[in-house]
Image (cartoon, rainbow, N blue to C red; front, side, top):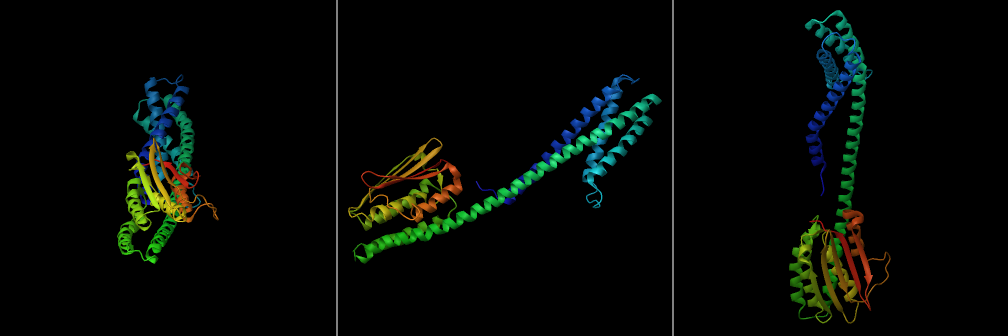
Length: 352
């Protein structure tokens, strides 16, 4: 499935509040852990109830976390000479004694408690700020990594789309020229069926050409193209072409690159049956094997013949489109027939 940059941006925007909540929860957890640890260090000399000590420590930790978070987003712009983390550390350093003094004013504690609270504030401030800075750097690095990954994925998708459109643009003229060349022989021979064939060809092309530019097709849609194509070819050479189809119904909904089956059949007619004096037979076998789908087109024509790249233009383009869409999960194979002919198989994921 292709995802546009706008869709990815919407996903990132929707996920941002969740990330902020998670970051806030982690910071509060760190502040609580540091506060409780610091409280345990001065629990023995503390003269008041332990509950008041830990409550004071927690309030100091939350105060430091609040100061750090506040100056993380405010002010939005800073002078170039001032790093934000420096501002955050200074803010934590100021908030801690202010919070300590406020708790001292509101409480009835002794001077000894006041000194301990001051010591606790001094103990909590640097560790709370350090933990928050480390976590902030990790979050920033993770966000940057995600942003780079999304950008790279979008660029790769755009390159893939451009390559697929280019290959798809090559399919249409190649298919049309080969089809017209097949019918030309019938017209040149002055057959009384030439007019009927041309009318059928025009009707077929009107239905087929728009489908050549679709981004994806199904086996069922491919069969809707192949059947009339084979009927046209059979009208052209009724004594030299026979064909049969064996299609697994569970494979009809499997998705494939447009004209996959049509390319295999057209290749069998042009390079297998046409050059043979006796003609031959084309068998189409399509089956679904669990998570895989195998499309096999077998002809009893002249067999494999060497070419510049080992495959004709149609099969070369089809192999490249399969690679771009499925990667290494799809394969196109040529198998020599006995005593003649060729079987071409496309083994691909059974995606629906």
